[in-house]
Length: 542
Figure 1: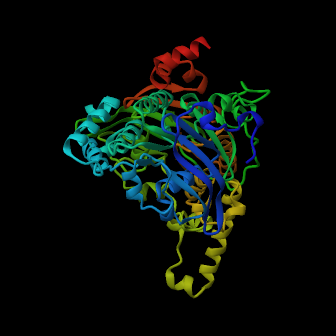
Figure 2: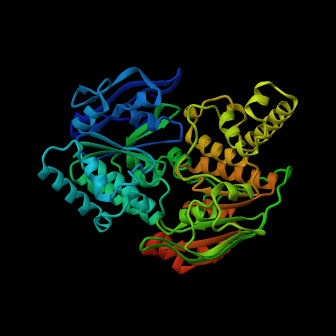
Figure 3: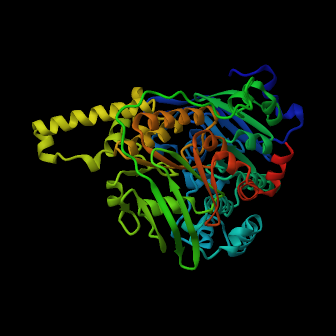
């Protein structure tokens, strides 16, 4: 394996470290003949935190799937190598048996049972535990670790904020009393103050004697809490060593921590504008006094804002502030209890999602919702469904109208793929694409509906610095080329402040600020709500 000379692993026994609990040795994994892991080896001691870093598509999630035994469910195959727990092979073991052996994974994307309550989710996580006393003790430990969940024990999980759902996913995994807990992107899509809380929770879990494998795009957080770390690139380990050594490495600082050598304080680089073609006709989006209630819970309270035609407007705020609820109101998924939403001359409130889409409004989702076994081209074609006029018979008979429509569709898909840097991947199935490509593809599918207003929900969640910049370039290209309005919900402040012309800030369902990026960045109430008082004070003293 390649790596910087000072970052190579040394023998555990020579350093007096705890003996190895989990071992991955020379692991080779492929999907349909495409190699995803190439000779990966790592060790997890009986206690402590091991971080696994790397770009999207580097193989981090594949590594976790292999260890937890669910690789085959994603079409993957172990070609060579072994995974051992206490020296016992896990590679061919049933996933349920691996959980019973003490290895539990919390997958990316906060996959909770939305229709079940918090307490019911925890009970589901404790099914492999034996005896009522053990289950009750595990539940009490979970509530001690996550007091917020104890307060909301009878609430449906689908109504929790993103941060609370992340906590519930971890708590549910802890109910099985694991020896090794594998966390896949636990900070994905979370506000800075919630990320700090998750980091502290990971430390506390480790202090309870549970070994933690932490896969993270947030390299700064991961290296701060971890004892050791591995860096994966293109399916191979390229660096490994103590977390402190990697955090001090110039290579890691530049590629994963966003510390540039010359212009570290320059902010997000302004992308180059392309020449505008194929422009749409956007309208002003006006939100007036919108309130949304779920039973006795008020998710939005008298929220008003305006997105100017052709502009890029951001909505930010901590998890649970009401941002995704607002997008769901704009697209007709949720009905407002009071207030109105207008897009140009069209009133959106009270209309169903297909009718709102017909007015030229498309959206992406926080969790990727693509068809994984279809090609990039076919996923883009799905975005054209509403505009397809040829029926099954005329398309099958290759009638002239159907051929003309097919040619027009192909031309549009080619333009969208070019805007999003996906042209060379049009014939690839989605499941082999890196995460960053899939996020851009989801935007592409929304663009294929030819919207004049594009709603983006967490477009760079889970991306590193390079991938975030690439997404920023793509968003500027498409807005300039198509002339559309963009409303984005995002936690990455650097990304938001480099793109948005205006920012609206929500907290606990209320609008607490609205203005230019410069005005919002300096607002004390925004700093306290979004970054937390502790972080805000650190910012002020920096």
